[in-house]
Length: 182
Image 1: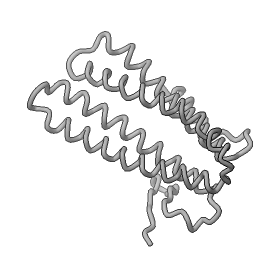
Image 2: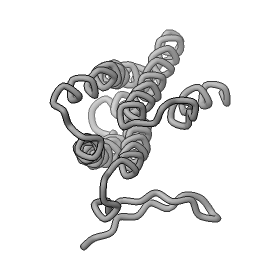
Image 3: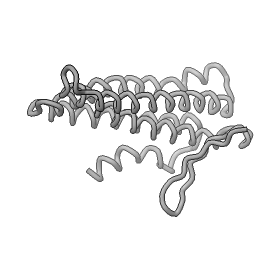
Image 4: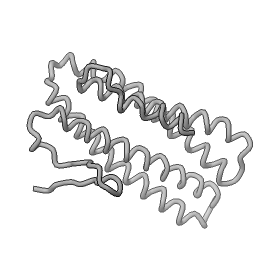
């Protein structure tokens, strides 16, 4: 399991490449694609012997990761499409940071929706709703961390550090997420 997690996040920390916005975006896309492949493979292998809530959890994970894989594939080529528009590193970073922060807001909606689906699952098809709700929470949680991480990675490419109001910093007890309002 530690090996899979290492393979998932290694592209985000690789140091042997020339650093550009495109490199950060490509590495993030590889991490998202790796998450997608790992989840689809896990769901496909475990759905055969699952029933009840677990069956629906694995099914929804499969559906989510078809979308995640498609987004990762598109995001591998999108920086090259933007390069044709002659955007500077700072403009590209600003544009992608906004996209990642909007996605982080959507991820919070996914987590909330999953929690509500799980909590109010006692009506019709409770096992399905609990399985789908748990999947929404897991996938939304990963995507929230991913989008916040990638938004933070865009900060170093922006011309003025004052443009950035979102910060991720290590603390003695873990990680601090903060947003500065002005």
